[in-house]
Picture 1 (cartoon, protein in one colour):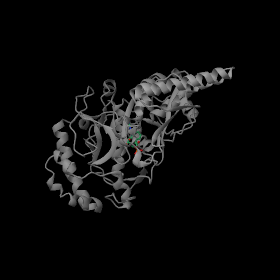
Picture 2 (cartoon, rainbow, N blue to C red):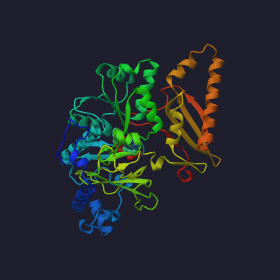
Picture 3 (cartoon, protein in one colour):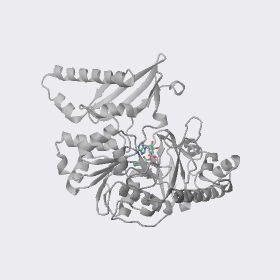
Picture 4 (cartoon, helix red, strand yellow):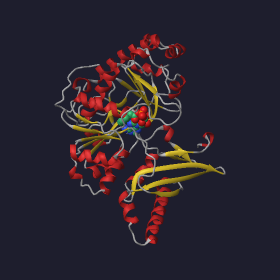
Length: 459
Ligand code: DLL
């Protein structure tokens, strides 16, 4: 791990590395990739067999382009080798375990050596600096602490940067607001839906945004949209920036938007001296050229305990080497619009939840939360959309003296949403209006889709 040029007084944490000329960066990636292959051949039975079956050794890799000849690793490989089968170090050398927040099947267990933890702090410090956070800033960290990587990942990165951390974790939104008002954090880190919750509660309690000192929001761990960014900017008077990561690769801090890339909406800088990104065609596995959208794949080229070779993230993105005004040379990955497994085919129409979020989030009477329940009855897909009223609207309609007037408002809003879905997304859904706070929101991420259709008919 590079220890060069950590300069807390500028917005670039590791200036030498983050500005590395492309040629030097590629040389570094290639040498690290070769070392990784040696590690995998020698220290992991699963990879040893897999590499042998593909006829690959560290010597067969002559250039980065040869990476396309290496086998992929998938979530299935993780599950089949649960819990330690993908480790290249004995458990005695593991300093910490984390787990993904996935709700399906067994959790994904990931492990870190002490060096991995130092690397993680480095990339999180880089990410925070990239967002404009400086030593001495107060950060309210409302990502969940615990097995989820969000809380502790950001925490140690912030401390390394020299910031002051409020380890608020998720939940207890009223208390979060008190902390924001009293301790005056300049930076808020949490999921975008949780930031919306904070914004809604401020409106409900009529807390003026000027009683807070927020300037930067570091939001990620779930897909979100430019429409959500606009709402968060308004509600919290903040610059919302996108942070991406996944437990398998390290946690938060795989890539981060800078204010310039946010303004241009052209993606997040990937810390590619550690995480080598590719975009592939999810159907064929063939690498796709720069700019084309496909499945994001990462190879961790410096991680010790649990390195991953061409890990298929299931996230849809694209890569761009267009120069950035911030001066960083690291490739940018486009905002993740959806996970491949979240992209649905409903009654033969392609659909992803972000498209729905775009419509709902900007609506004056709704919160950003929704739940789409898809089922199949008599060979036909049925769609039920549950959407939450925002607190202001719910309170206003609740306080109407004439109950008929309130139910009229409900009915008209339901019709309006139904029509929007039909016109803009070509889907016909039953719409249910829910009271604020009633839709599930697990600590880390919003659950937005429940597909009850039998697997074979989910298209
Ligand atoms: O969500 C790590 C993280 C924590 C990232 C805090 C950012 C901030 P997992 O629980 O393993 O790790 O979930 C990883 O979440 O494959 C994406 O599908 C999704 N995801 C993460 N960040 C973003 C983002 C953490 N900025 C999975 N935009 C990933 C869209 C995201 N999706």
